[in-house]
Image 1 (tube, one colour):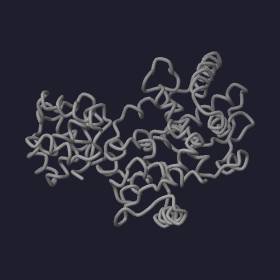
Image 2 (image 1 turned 90 degrees about the vertical axis):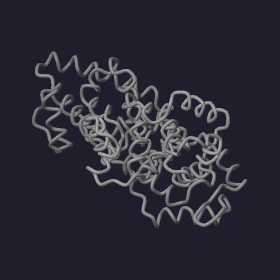
Image 3 (image 1 turned 90 degrees about the horizontal axis):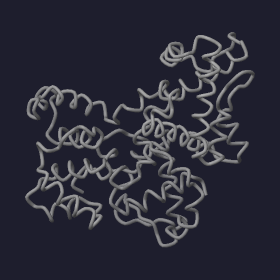
Image 4 (image 1 turned 60 degrees about the vertical axis):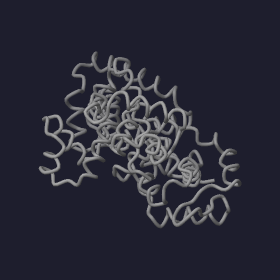
Length: 356
């Protein structure tokens, strides 16, 4: 089965009829709305966020139609599908086929992939050629920001270049040990070096007998392992961290929520921000949930008491309710915003975008 179908089925199983197809399409293609960002974490499908960036709506509908025709999914209500027993059984049978997907975290890293890869591959190519005293080569990346970053960080002496090359080799090797062997080889062969041009995705797809989509996802999974490794142990990845660490620490906020966050840091209250930015209350609340989820130092104490926070977390952990309404019924004195903030702050794992 094509990986696109497997991804779709897994998402439908996890969402379990709680979201319409349009919401799933936004998650798959990486549309940065408060709803899609929150749903990705609420249903624990953040690894699928932006996994199929270029998927057209027609292709998305074709996948749904084919799964429906094959009786792997069924219609629950208008534009809402769930897995059939046949679909659930089939999904379980292929569960180990695409285990590398668990390494992805599109929600955190999809927006920085291209910039980070450009810097890594240009640095590797430049370093490789310099070790063979070849300074007259055609760079694989000509993007100005990447070229400037590499120029600033590039070691000046031969001794320094050899030292950095050794460190970088060990760092990449450590990362690749955590990855599926096919993913690792696809990543390595995409790198360019001395007398070596990196493979295209099409070349790797033919070599491994994979679809282009799966090849790209395998490559991206390695990038995400690199990002995660740097984020968790920057001191262990000195070279990689110096190259791309600045991108990784940036929170995954929408542009609009970032503007709201900057105003909050200037001690503007909610009413002031709404007036300054001409925001509706619902939009302002969505921004607060995003910020609570993504910014560890952002406190929700001004909006909900510690006692209520602990009670909601305890209730969620006991019931694992995937909708806000049952939680609201259990805590009628709390607003939906307060509930969303608590769940967003709880490790950034359970944020939701609406009361549905």
